Length: 345
Ligand code: NAP
Image (cartoon, rainbow, N blue to C red):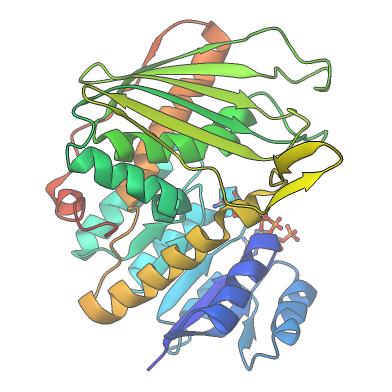
């Protein structure tokens, strides 16, 4: 039996996920949808020629017995309420980041899930499912490079729109590194500092760009992360972990190599969708398969969503203060520890 998904929010990424569930993945189907804009929901099911029910809101959608898992792809401030209602109804949840827009909201979800007694929620931190990051993680976990000492990484976008603000560099852009890096080095963050190099003339007046973020982990690993969202040349994700015995580096995305007009070159991707399309497919297939085979999701948990929120808040504080700001993350509850090792094979 296919896992029945109810979709809350049929905007850009909601429709992409609906398409991948319907056309690319196996073992799941879309059975219900809702959006604040009913026309958008109607259009989304027509595009894919689905026989899904359309509901007025998430409360009505959750009452549909065919909905076994909820895909939460509404805008961030609406996530917490839908996730809490889904837990209350005992339904599985795949929620796009952020889990909730505040650390307190994430903690309410963590507490509700623990009260329920088994994991229901997976957060859409898809980089853990990218084959390059997974190879790096394997190398680190297998002691191939010895203890990690330093990390250098970069998150570059070609350009940003008018609505992109300085804090979004942490909360919307770096949020993926925030999740990936503590998982990669197997350590918790201790502090964060943000410094601003010379500003690019390509960024709008109100935006500080680029930014350099320095994390220190509890065991002393120093991580330098560059955020440069008006780099002009494309979408570029870099990551290198320097260990006691060697270095592992994220591979470049393979694109065709060309020889033309005296140049030996290859194209740089322009869009995150292309860069992480396989990772998105892998994370969803893992969510579906884990529920079907093991009865609960194994990927990034509510606790990981909480870590990202606490770290993001400290990052925004560090942007404003210019100081080293502490990141206070309590010990991972046993409920979530059981799932750490089995997250991604
Ligand atoms: P979007 O295009 O604005 O889509 C959101 C949709 O949800 C819109 O149709 C919106 O309607 C609707 N909506 C808002 N509140 C709702 C509610 N309470 N109930 C039902 N529907 C509601 O945004 P998006 O780009 O798809 O992003 C959606 C989420 O995915 C965001 O949290 C974003 O951060 C996340 N995301 C993650 C990644 C990733 O890399 N993992 C990438 C992109 C986006 P209106 O337009 O009428 O308000």
